Length: 222
Ligand SMILES: [Zn+2]
Ligand SMILES: [Zn+2]
Image 1 (cartoon, rainbow, N blue to C red):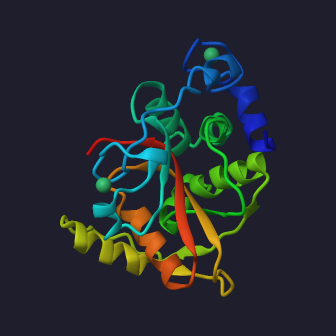
Image 2: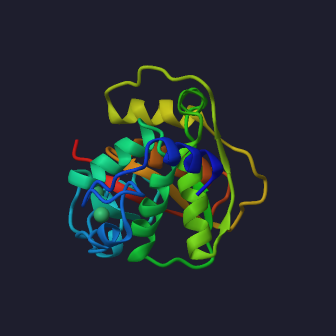
């Protein structure tokens, strides 16, 4: 827990969303209730697949091997994300990282956040994806690298998938010159259409990454 969280905690102690106990947004006992894995599907079309693989059809636009998803976006998962992103409760990243790392293991990958738009970071006072991915890398004892940066232009995105991916791709930039042959694990909090994951994966693959997978906290229905 960092100093800011400690100070905030002294003024207004956090209440567990699950059981109402004081001290944390999700206590250890309630965090364990989320350890059950969800059904493995393609993150884009939701067809059942093994090992959370992106199906062959969706791979044509989404160059990702697997998108590992911890939870569906509902109930306490939704509350936790809301607390984290909109109420700016940084400590929610701890139970989120616990839940995300419980059922999956990775070797020999660079852990990299899907970069947050700079405008959002300024609004929140912290970078939610970066904090989450640092926590995950630490828990899994993997190398953490910010391989991507994001341009500061939040535009109205087009409605068509192809248009959306093209626009998203222009937002991301690889800022490392030695990812050739590397395996990358992208971290994000929510996946909906998969357009931002696809765009981030595309620029990484174009820069020489051998493969890209993703680990996401929750999957939202479109
Ligand atoms: Zn609890
Ligand atoms: Zn699919």
